[in-house]
Image (cartoon, rainbow, N blue to C red; front, side, top):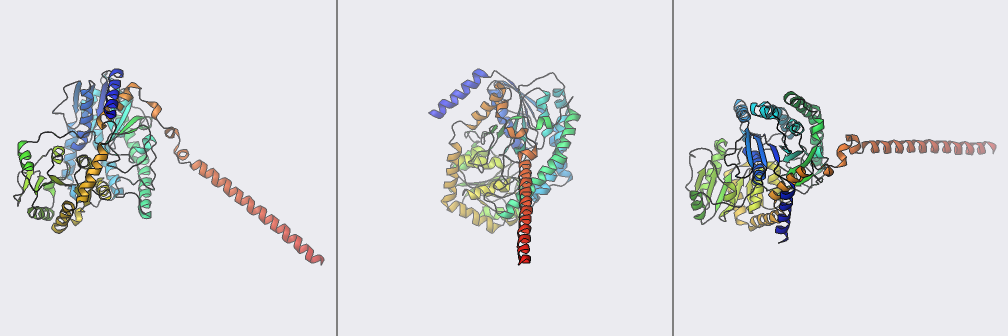
Length: 520
């Protein structure tokens, strides 16, 4: 009852104090999962009566009925990304063993080129050169810092949206502490507590990123914004000016880590109550008396790109199961498809996971998939490939609701044994349900939290009172290097003085004793 009262109070406060505002959302990443997060938030704001403009690579097929929702579609970026993958003959399944240092450099050189496509796009330039003003600008954080200058250009406070929890991309920009001793980089498959060598590599990666970003990335972003924004500000006047950060994280999903006051957790805000399934899926799930295993490698990884030996290992495993299998397969047919396997190019994942007959989710360990499986309390078998997938999968293992099968070790025997282990051991489902209970135990829903804080920033003209003082300190003062140097200097001088005094006293005593001996 108290939760309902507080939610209503927050919504009424926002309604009375925040009239329909003009909101610009910039979600530039050409990935469906990223767009899903952005459009879900922006549509919710439009439903509350706001005038919303969305810059993305995708258009909205189901715009909200309330408020105003306008798409600014940059189709050229999606094509550029697809062409780049074709030119490099890129198969994402080959990235399992990617080095975190090489990955940082790869993204550092590739993403600015793609992000510049957004700023120079004709429709975006038309918006930039218009006389429009916005009350707030929401920008997704993804190696696109130049686009944050749109907030300054349109005279609006900046909200940064982080698709995951706190990480290296956002922590320095809001002064959030992230101790290297127990907070691993998201590109490392480490969890706390880390060993000495894990902490060493974590530290080396942090130093590498600091140097790479400050010496290369930020200067490149600065050139980009000055090139495409009339009278563009200096990037460094924009970088550290975020009003709040919306974090798509929660303690039921992520390791507990520090947050400064302007970091707001809204993890799971995109998950909706289950809807009615298409009739064929409903019938398949309802009639699967032995249960269903749901298999999807997400929106970027495609099952059709699996090497033949891996695909056959999966097929042979599925063919011997008593359970039915629902497989997201991106082609019209699958050679050797077993009778207990149903295929579909697209599947309503959230609604499928909500069905009581789903016993196991075989996944790549993507962040949204991890969030949705925790929401519904379904255990996972993770086959992580790249990015944060390995960290998400290892977190599932440590929390007891999942098991990892490394892609390099994927075989019929390994996959079969792991599936039987999860299905026959109740602890995995019990732990998944426990995590789900923690996920749902919130004072206010994550979506209401998100919309409240966006409107809070509008009401308080950027909410500068949430900014921590650490952002105003030079790096050497923030890390107390000047204090350490001063203390070391004073300590060294004191030791030196003590040494010389001791030396002088010893000499005097020795001289005195020598003089006495001579007199004798």
